[in-house]
Structures are given as structure tokens and as C-alpha cells.
Length: 285
Length: 265
Image 1: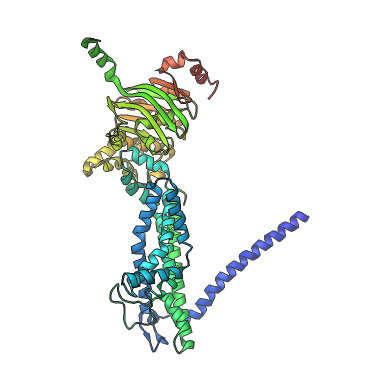
Image 2: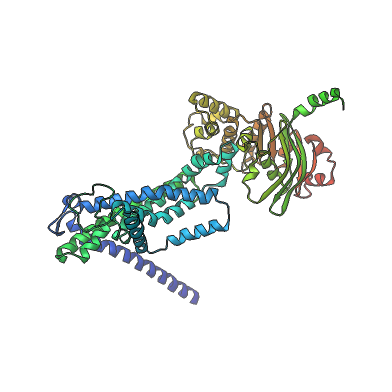
């Protein structure tokens, strides 16, 4: 009797925790949808802001976020995958490599505002790129690099050693084996990591605060050296600056809804790919 | 020895040696895994390597196509001659050795690609681009490995959809496609059912017409069924080597007798 009673208490407690977590999650989504949905319209998505941010659309911020995300992936993808391949396939097992792995894992824990300051110092000032898409993309690229490396690393390690042996035993070189067997087999896992990092990049504010984003632009960015508007920074700006807080808050919720939608979209694609990968190959990951 | 006898030796014996292992010693870290192995593998014969787990059988055949180089902290001394050429020499390209000495592994390991791509893989990595030639060779290899009839209508299907036995025959086809001279089988039936095993054994006997075959096996009946010569390994040593019939009927060493009669192992 006593045992069953304590079991019931245990289950109730666990259920309560689960319920609270889900409640928070859904109330956040609900809150943003309810407050944001009213301003969403075709014009909101496709037009320039008007009347000191109190009317019009957020098109340049959406476009800016797109450019920054794309730019960061272009820079981080080759670096991250190359780094993962080196660590998994080429590096001798030594303490130097352990230090490298340790550093990469630590990099993932550095607060994003620190990356922002780094970007400001190196890309904006020292290399002279100015506040621009280029500086912002590079800063975001460094931010997501650890994510891409660890996702690629795991995906590559999940490729069974027996496939490498099969390839080598047919007279393939190590490079052919990596290119034709290891990477294609690991690709879905790597893709999952990339898409998750896209979601992360799209939502980051601090790294672009000093390196890329501005509150308002008259038109769309013209080159990679242009400043841009971006969704997360736009929300921040609408809530902290400007003269008409009442009208701005509504638009900020609209932006938040769009941003949330984009990030959820990316995550769903990642989950879809991961499941498909499991079904076809049956290998872990 | 005058020239006359040397000639005779060459024709009758040396010409039929495909692989010659000389004083092979192998260390995993501090573990002495193979001790002074000297063994001749004869051309167009099936040589079975038997012995209890951990006796160095797999390690030994991995040396024959330089797959031991993937093992970290390993040390190898001794020489392996393939048609008289020392293949462990640093001036020999290991990829060339592996093309000439193919390997079929314990667990079927097809690539997660189509059946066609699996078989054509070896040709492509060896620089062959001619599509018609590749197609011919793929069909030929699938026919030789007795898989053609089962897969001819679905060459574009993923190889992982095949059954375990079919996957293993696909791995054999993949190996045959690059025209090796020697094929190493590392317990090829360990994960297969009896019917699939019978098919693979039939295939091995059929293949020895054109290839030199070495098969590592735990299964004594299998060694007796498919092989012409048998080598018995124990704790890293080659205890006995001879014609399979002799080894099984009248083993010279007490340890061989104990093993094949099932007293240990």
C-alpha cells in the first residue's frame, strides 16, 4: 500500500513537471500568435516600414535576416565540415587534438554578445569591413561553427567503420573513401546540424548588434558592405527606441511571430530529414 | 643446387605459390598477436584458416592486403610476397595491393547506395569512366556471384533492402568487379542462415577456378567442405598447415587434434 502510494506521488510529480513545461511553451507561442496575428498581412511582409516604424511592413528586415543567415552558412559550412573531417578522419589521436575538441566545445558556450564584440573589433574595425552584411555574416558564422562542427562530427562518427574498410579494400584511397562513402552517408546528419544552426543564426541579436544591423534603412541593402535591418534586431529596436511605443509594440509582436515561424519551419525540416535518414539507413544518429 | 633442379622447383612449386608469408610478427601495443608466421598460399586453391577466437586469424588475413594499417599502435615485421613481390614494402601503393587482394567481411557491409552503385564503386575509384564497360562488368560480377537473377530488375534499389545473404553476395560481387587475384573471406557466413551459408560456400568453390581464396572460419565443417588446405592458428602461432583432408583425418599436432575434435575453442 505504501509503495503504491509513493509511486502515485512520483508519477503525479513527474506529470506536473511535464505539464508545466508544455504549458510554458504553449503559452509563449499562444501569446505571440494572439498579439502578432493582427498585424500580419501581405503588405506587412512585402512593404517598407512607414511613418517612423509605426506603419507599413518589415520586408527589409526579413530580407536582411535572409542575407545574414545565408552569409553565415556560406562561411561556416565549408570550415565546419572540413574541421569535422580532419578531427574524425585525419587527426592523430593526441592531446593536441583533445585540446582542439575541448576548445570547440567551449566555444559553443561563449555568450553571443562576446562574439558581437569580437566581430566589432576584428571584422568591423581591424579588417575595415564596417557595419555590414559581411561583418555580421562572419560573426554569426563563428557563432554557429561549433554547432556545425559537433553535428558533422557526430554524423561522421556514426558512419560504420565497416563501410570505410569496404571502400579501402576495393582499392579506394582515403580521400575517395571520405568523398564517396563517408560524407554521403553522413550527409543527412550534417544537414540536420546545419538547419538547426540556421534557426539559431536567424534568431541571434547580440552578434549583429554592433556588426551588421541598423534600426532603419531607406531601401534594401545594395552589396555585402551595406548595413542591413534584421528581424531580431528590429524587435529589439521597436521595443526600446522610437516615439510611438503603442504602435511599435504591435509591429514587434508581428516580427516575433514571423521569426518564430521561420525558426519552427527550419526545425521541422531538420526533424523530417533526420527521420528520413533513420528510415533509409538504419544507422544510428 | 644446379640450374636444372632450380627450374624444376620453379615449375612444380614456386609457380603455384600465390602468397608467401615470411616471419610475420604483429603487435597490438604490447600484445604479441602473431608469432613468426611462415605460410604459403597456393594459387587457385581454397585455404582455410581455423582456430579459436583471438588467435590472430583475422589479423593475419588483414596483413595480406595491408588493411592492418588502419589499426592504431600496431607494429608489423616480416614480409609478404604476392607473386614474388614484397607488398609490405613502402614503395608499393597499398591501394594497388588492395585492388589485387580483395576482401569480404564478416558482416555484410554494402554501401547505403543502389545495388548498381555498390558493384560499380570499385571500378570508379580505380579510374574507370567508360559507362558501357562499367555496366558490362557489373552484370558480369553479379552473375559470377549468383545474385543476378534475384536483382536484375531492381539494380537501382538501395542495397540495404536486400536480405543478409543477398547483401553478402553483393559484397562478393563488389569485390569481383575490380578483378582481384586473391579474395580474402573473413568469416563470411558468421551472420547468415544455413541456406545463405550454403549458397556462399557453393560460390567459393566455384570461384577458386579463377581466384586464389583464403577463408577464415570458426566452422570446422565449413573448412572441411570448401577448402583444399587448412592452417590451424592458436594464440598467434601457426600450429599446423597441410591438406585439409590430412589435417582433419590425421592431425600431426595434439593441439590441432584437440581443437578439431571439439575439446576446446
